[in-house]
Length: 125
Image (cartoon, rainbow, N blue to C red):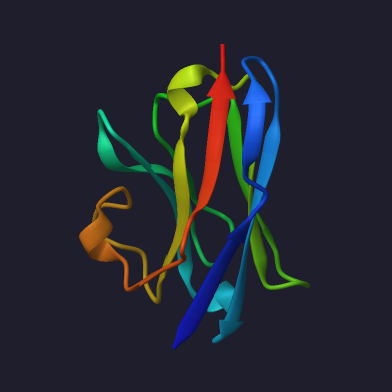
C-alpha cells in the first residue's frame, strides 16, 4: 500500500518555474514506476511524465518535453517534477501516481494503482 502526497503547487507568471514534489509513505517508491498526471478542463487527465523504478527510463508528453524534468530522490523516497518556461496551458491540478511495474502505456490512468490528492498549478499570462 502506498500513500502519495504532492506539494509545491502555486501561482506563477508565464515563463516562470515551479518544482513539484511527491512523497510516499508505506511502500518504498523506488519499487514503483511513478508518473505525473495533470487534469485540465480541455484535456481531462493526461500523463505528463513517467519514470521507471530505477530512474533509467523516462517518458515525457510532447507538450512538456524540454521544459519539464522528472527525477527521483531515493534518499527521501520522493519524486520531483521541475517545470520551467511555464505556459498558461500548463495550468492544471497535478497528481503523482504509482504502480508496482511499468504500465503497458505509461500515460494511461488505468495503469496506475495509487494516486495522490493533487496540487494546483496556475500560470498567468
